Structures are given as C-alpha cells and as structure tokens.
Image (cartoon, rainbow, N blue to C red):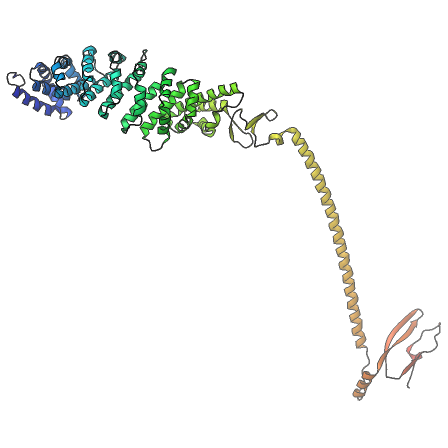
Length: 539
C-alpha cells in the first residue's frame, strides 16, 4: 500500500496505521524495523504529496525516538539527506507558514540527534536545516530545533565547534528571553552544553560576547525550577573560566541573588546546589579583588554551610583556603591580623581533621595549622596573629587575652612556693598558739571546776554539821513533855566552850532555861576545863 504512489489517500491511511504501531511499545517498533518498513518510509520523503510526506516523517520520528538501536536503523536507511532536502527545498512552505511539516520535521530531526552514544552525523547539511528552523517564529518548531542543537552540543567537541561556528549563539541567547519556557529551556540547555565543553578552544567567550550572562541573571529567578537550575549550572561553568569571564559574572550583579538562593532553606535542593557551585568556582578561580568582593557579599556563609555536605566538602575547603590566603596577603600589607579568619567557624574546620576521607582531613589540618590557634588554657579557638591571642615564649604556646599563663612560669612558681611556705609557717604558729590557749582554757576550767567542787563539799559538810547539831539537841523527859516543850519554847541554848587539852578548845551546846547562869572556874594552865568544872546556877 505504501508503494501505491498513484493513490496518496491509501498511502496516508497505511501511514496512519504504521504511526499508531510505532507509537506503541518497543516491541512494536522492532517489528516494523524487522519487516523492512524503514527503507520504504524513507523513500516516501521524496513524495510530492504533503500529507504523505508529513505522515512518513511522523512514523520515522517515532521510530528514531525508541532508542539508540532504532535511531541507528533509521539513520542507516539514509533518512538524513532527504529529510534535510525536504526542509530546504520548500521555501514556499516556510514563507506561507505551513507549520505542521516544520513541526514534525524538526521533531524528527531532534530525535535523530538524541541518544547516547551520540550518532555519527553529516553536520554541515544538518546545521543548514537547523539555522533555517531557528528563524521560525513558532514556539514548537523553535523548541524542537533547540533540543536538536542541545543534543549536538552534548556530543563530541567537533559538533560543538560546528554549532558555534554556525553563528547560532546570538539567536540562542535571544531565545533565553522567549515567552514560552518550552523554548527557553532547550535554548538554555544548548548554551550550557557549549559553556561546559572540554576542549582546547574556549567556546565560553562566544556565549559571553552574545550577552548571555545578562539573560542568565534574570533566569535564576524564573518560576520554572528546571530553568532556574540550568541557569545556575551555566553560570557556574562560566565562573570556572578565566578571571575576565568571572568578572563578567560579578559585574552582572548575579552574586547577591545567588547567595540568597544558596542560603534560603526553602530553595529547591538541586537549584541550591547549582547556586553554590557558582560561588565555589568563583572563589577557587577568581583574583584577589574578586574574592574580596565575594566575601563582602557573604559567600563565606555559603561555603561554611557546604562543609556539612559530603559531596562538596573538598571544594568548600578549597574555596575557604583561597579566601584565607587572600586575607593573609592583606594582613601582611597592613601589618594587622587576617580579616577573613574570624568570619569562618574554626571549630567546624577543626572537626574535619578527623574526617574519614584522608584528603579532606589533610586539607582541614593544613588550614587549621596555618590560620588558627587554640588557647592552651581555655581551649578556645582564635585566628592566628589576632589581637585576642599572643604567643608566650616561656610557655611555648598561644594564650588568649582572657587567660593568664604567668601562673605557669617558673618565677611565678618560685614566688608562689615562698608564699605557700610563709603561709604554712604562719598556720603552724597559729595552730601552736591555739593549742596553748586551749590547754590554758582547759586548765583554768579544770581549776574552776575543782574550786566549785570544794565549795560544794564545804556547803555539804556544813549542812551535815547542822543536821548533826540538830540531832544532838536535848529532848524533854517523859511525863513532863508539855513542860519541856514549854521550856524549849521560852528558853535558849548557850554555847559552852571547853578546853580539852592545852591549845585545843571544843564548843558544845547546852540547854539553859531562861534566867539560868553558867559560871566558869578560874582557868589554870596545867589542866583543861571539863564539864564537871562548870557550875550552873539557878536564879
């Protein structure tokens, strides 16, 4: 049916059936290739019927998009030459805006350029067709054309060279400002692939001269996440170039919004990562003046945050080391301390000395050893050569201004020992004096206690004598109790002094009724008085 050239309507229906089959699964596509449909479809590209031509391109585009094997089978059938000739030999179609064929043709060409590994193409005719398609105003045609260019620029360096020399860079930069993101995204991808090309020829300058950096500055704030990420990715590759190219990025004013994107937590992770790469590349490859500008815009916070991301720790350390080196040069010129060292977290850098990666641990140790010190007393971390620290030649260590290391010096120790000896001697003297005082107080207390005990004994003896005297009082005789009682009540006791022997006098009590008298005999020295010598007279 496809061979019925005299009946285009039958060919169109047959092509529609094959289109539906080619749009199915991979197995369906392989069935068409296996039964030799590709050469017949390629031959239909020379048809004079526009509907047949369009439908044949549709089937071939579906087949080419089913993988590398199907793509190579279509290219092997020689589809590229008639496809390009079809697009180039119909200027009237382009002029009158017959977009259906242009859309399908550009889409089929994009599928033929896609896939890894990249196909071996005859580039000059392909580039002529793509250059012509780029002049279209239709968004769909432009989108397919830009995707085809991006696939070519993602291949060998010879493809990139052909694209750049084809003069399409200015048009691609213009398309970055297109109203449709479906055009902007593939155009941005193409520019990004050109910038990141690894070749002896620097293609980045062509993109910069076309004014791409200014457009990229706008695209980093695009509402489409993919476009944001692609714009940051392209800028990061430009920032990895020469000093002049980095300066172009800085002059565009893109650094402040990039740092804002990199530090805001709500930013998409992939977009934030690409924004950080711009700062990393600029600090690693920039000049001293450029690094000073980056530090003034707050890039140190971005780099410190990257120390906690495993995949970017090494690059972050490299950027921080470069910043500290610039600070050291400035400190030597001014005679002061490193102005950038206090902006970094010394503790975080010191922790990386124990990283499981030996390369990361060595670089962190080198940064710490070169630019930071630890106070030997309080163990706080400080920038080296800052006003907050000093090196003690006697202790052979760094000490902060809040700590005093003189207490560890030998002269201080000698003075301290002398003070301690004097204090110990004074304390010993005080202890001895206190001990003597305690003994005296104890002795005095014992004496007072003994004296008090003697007084108590005397009082006790006096009470006992009084009791004894009371017991020795005469009692009244029997039968005359009342009279005796009356006598005791009206009479009194008299003390009778008796001399028992020379020099000794004894006193005794004698009951004397009222009016009675006691007469003592005349005393004689050769004998003592006794009771018998005393005479009691009644009145």
